[in-house]
Length: 296
Length: 245
Ligand SMILES: Nc1ncnc2c1ncn2[C@@H]1O[C@H](COP(=O)(O)OP(=O)(O)OP(=O)(O)O)[C@@H](O)[C@H]1O
Ligand SMILES: [Mg+2]
Image (cartoon, rainbow over all chains, first blue to last red; front, side):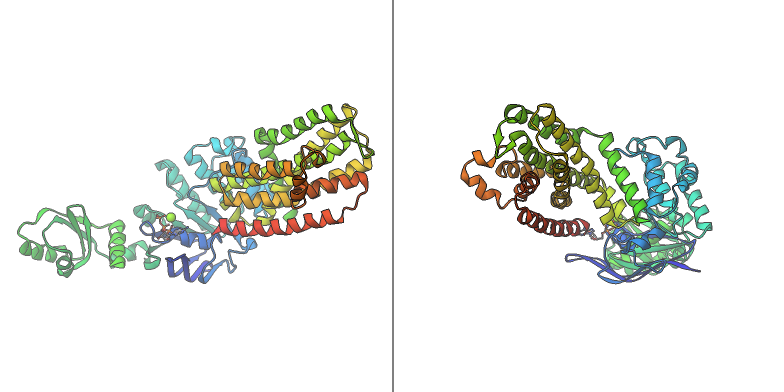
């Protein structure tokens, strides 16, 4: 598979803050990679390196073999930014046409993309007069008009309703069939497990884990034992079969692959155990467990 | 490819100015109204073989052009930066220089408009006595000489927000205009003004324009403006880096 994004040993500091600490990441043609991680993990920093907004202090970033800091490389790149404000004076159609010309494709490319994103009727409207979801579609139209090899999306479905969200993933799937690679950041863990081929979990500027959503779940606890307990964190971590420990108010969440064995010991050790629940752990729990361990 | 892209960037900028003309209205109307007032009062007085109205075309003309190119690109870039639109340009395949040049070039038609309106005003009031080639040279000199001010405008636009940019740019513009004799001739001002004026690029731009009428030596003025352009370009570049990181 052709590689459309290659990140090797990427490091970035903001003054004394190390935001990225040796990150490796690949996105192949047609592949969708989701970047997960808690606030401050370094997701936006990595995205900014990939789209050429920031220089890598160390390491190598290649988009279709080229340096994204070089303008010509970015012709292969479509970007949807998290909070983009449009100029107050420009209309939808003009913005998409402009994006086409800027990326070196004919103006006529704008028509089909406007239609694809249901924006044809809005072409004459000023972008600032669009609803949040319509603006998101406009950004996507601008990103797609030149048929990029790599799409970089920073929380692209934030603010979209369910229908718009489905439509969005459908569109993306069509593009992926034509070979466009996708790198997206999201906080919607379950959504990413549904649409991404691979999930990369960042924490404190490092890759904590990466693999298919299924692989991640398999490597991680598949049950969560939730309870109120008097036992301290160190003791809990030492219990048999405990993979992760997460405090949540008065409760602790214990990730495990052997809930029965764990429960026997837990009940024996803490007679005051209360509010006991066992749930199946989804990817969200898996990621939370990973991040907790990464931070420890 | 770059000519097409420049065309699109320029069209976007011009649309911006045409569709939201309020800001520009003031930067055009204010200097022209000022000029009309002064020229109707003093335009027919003579000084050194030239009517005051004709001389004023160089000083008020310099002021008008500078106020257009100083306000527009800077406030535009500050607004783009605030709303995140500048980042959209930065991740596009367009080199940032093309975008910024379009911003500067887009303000030139309006600067030219100011000069044409002033020339018409002088002619209508009967205060204009200069041959057309000299008038065209003044137009050319003022528009070319506007470059350092446009770059300075960008430098400030990269540093501060929209509201502050307007205030800072006005704080640069108005005192330099007064001190350089762009409103009241230096000849009737205290000597101190002329001493300070020699250090201001605004003064040298007006003198360069005046030299097109009088035939006075112009090289020194041109060199000062060239130097200012280099300094302003460096400032704009440093300022852009600062905004980017
Ligand atoms: N411009 C900046 N100057 C200084 N520090 C910064 C800057 N931007 C980010 N940081 C720091 O770098 C680290 C990574 O931030 P980043 O924005 O990449 O995280 P993120 O994963 O995108 O978080 P979120 O989910 O909240 O968007 C954080 O510690 C953050 O405080
Ligand atoms: Mg972020």
